Image 1: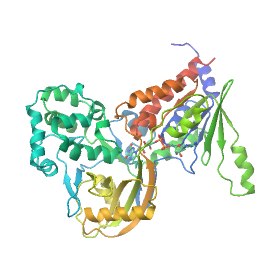
Image 2: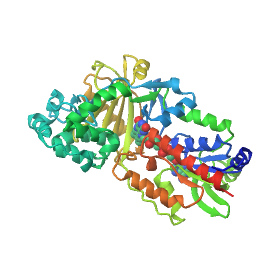
Image 3: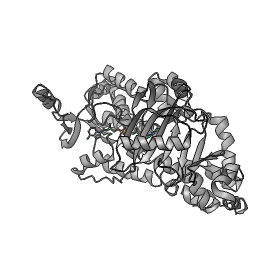
Length: 485
Ligand SMILES: Cc1cc2nc3c(=O)[nH]c(=O)nc-3n(C[C@H](O)[C@H](O)[C@H](O)COP(=O)(O)OP(=O)(O)OC[C@H]3O[C@@H](n4cnc5c(N)ncnc54)[C@H](O)[C@@H]3O)c2cc1C
């Protein structure tokens, strides 16, 4: 431990210039973590608003998140951040909303609510919904798992391969795959079972079957974890607003409408080169040019996604792997409730071919606050679709309304709608993710004062990103404050 006096460290912080590229949740958290210890921070965001994927809007007077909405209550970093920002009172735990799978039938999708499960693996293969989804032979195949020798799970890390080998392909395809494909656009064969369902490995060794293992985990879930998911009343943008307010109080320079286009090394740090927003007239031209002067930095935080990081680092000889990501269209609808049944599952994942959508969330079934806000006459739904370049908002909204009408016969017309297109980063539980992140960071880490954060490295999801960003910023703060001469 160094004996540097606190005043010396405070001086170092004050003279350590930080530029954060990207104003999504990763960039905002990184900026705050640096600004709060006295570092002068400039944040660059190419869009006219901060928040990145996080966006909340009013549709027909109902406040709704348009893409990310839920987070895990068992994530200490995010929960701690919400406490620090004074947002704990805004946290709304999820209702006991059920998850369903939609099967293709000649008469339209048939919705089957899953029995108690983990990652779609049922605790009881004889439950009626399992039979409805996989048929009598599928149930027998799944039951055979009870009669097999209790292999340890450690021999099979892939969730999909494990379920297929122990309970059969039909159960994998109809109970497990719709959930991972609908949520992440990732096949269950690509998911690391130990990360996706912690504890299943040990439980399988004890119970001797997958269903038995899930049966052992479920009471634990109920007793120790309580509701695992939550949202913020008033939307996730409250997190963005609270961080922005704190940053402004700390005199951070937040520049929206500016794109970082280059990064050069200087003898004492970095220069970040910017493209300004397009000036609307002559009067805006000179201020746009001034605000686009290159920014000197001692720490550069790359928080703008894999493609931007790869482009900025290429000229420094750092080649990052930027795998193509699935692109999703997200359509949020406020519809007249009509005569449709008001209850039902909170989330519906189709088996391929059952519906156009990749996932459907009945937002009012998932969250009591939204249901109360919308009232009995309206229904708030969010549907995602695998994006096709030719689709436009009008087509997508019509397709979403058509899927809704099939799922809830009697539902009324669309009162308001919003559509967003976004890439889906895979979760941290994808096989090989930790190794790819480590390799990227090893390549970047050799350059003093440069770090990369965000969903491409942490895995998709606000909780994972907050935890990872806090750890990375702490690492670079320590390096710069304690080792810079
Ligand atoms: C449909 C959908 C639903 C989701 N649902 C959930 C959910 O319920 N719960 C959950 O936890 N997660 C969810 N996610 C994932 C979550 O939204 C993301 O993982 C997270 O918001 C990503 O944050 P980020 O800061 O890494 O990236 P982003 O939010 O993408 O921020 C990156 C920012 O960098 C900016 N930028 C890019 N290039 C430049 C440049 N050259 N110069 C300046 N700025 C630049 C971009 O404009 C953007 O604002 C969902 C994602 C999608 C697409």
